[in-house]
Figure: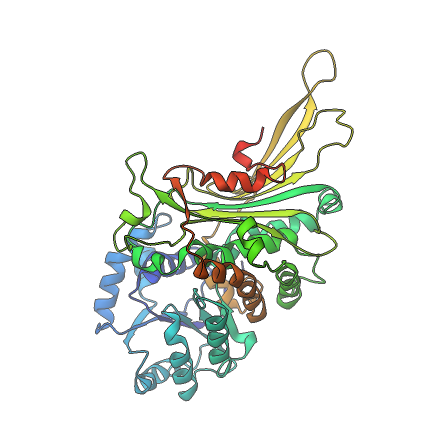
Length: 479
């Protein structure tokens, strides 16, 4: 990665959890790797009545502990020297004059990145106040942290409000899954290797599975999660990005809009479900107490009668020539049997069964390992031509040279460099919300409780039945 131009990174919500756990450690790693311009500045902004020394002390206490690699005293000292701080209330327009004065006092800055790591309800006021003091010019880039709304209407309202003050080509809607190297690798894997793309379609592929599973429960996020649920938290953002990279057509170029145009086409091709289809093709679950672990409704700050889903499985359909008739199974859940994020592409079995009926498959793992596993069939050792399964494994971390950046580090560097490829466009996010709305509406109108599943399992039995109805099975249950 090239060293970046001189910058001011204005970090709203600088004393918050995301800034301390992810953003500042990511910036430290970029600094330690020599990627940041030597004069680039990080300007923390929040309501906390700190001066610079007090903010740096908080960073030392609450952020430094999250840096697990490349930490040494001299590098840390030089990183902290980049940090400045300004106390500002995002709801008080008059406070922004001091911010403008501080930013404009550095005329050598090539670009200004404004990162709104705040609740979305503050986005409109912040953008209006930034514009009023001239901090929305051509050299200003705006980063919007998720969640961008709770439904289609609120997402459109946020986009409409922000668009009054910032042009689309200067808005960076962040989804940290797009910063994962293993997900980005899907494009060269598919389009640069002639033995993959010719079979990447409905004639050869039986089904696609996309899984994001977590072993942890909601922990201390009960209040947030109870108002959000798995569908809003994971499906319409992270899982949608994974689906797009699997299903998109070859872009005309690797420019931001050419890539994002193809992703948009995938989302628009997703079949919108009616009420009956939601009942048949969507499974809503909630973890229950098991193996010494609490059930969801026993977690702190969760309503005792909560119907919020901690698990969702969906059979989706992409209605286009490449994928017509191929089910895309999406599932995500908390308190699952293992922590994993992976895509499994199941191929069709040989029609004549010459070497058995069990098909080959490719698994692209994003976590905990970054690897590509290809299950294929080979001859069993000895006489005869009996076929047995074998697996080829490409460990991306071991096979590719160079330091692997954390997702937030990579995305922050992309913003500073002005590259939009790994950020969401307004129309794509609105299309994703339009697809999930019938599911949300159906649940809101229904008095059917979520299916219970034991903490530490792979989810409700109904999710197995969802696949079994098509003669399919989840990856962990396949031979």
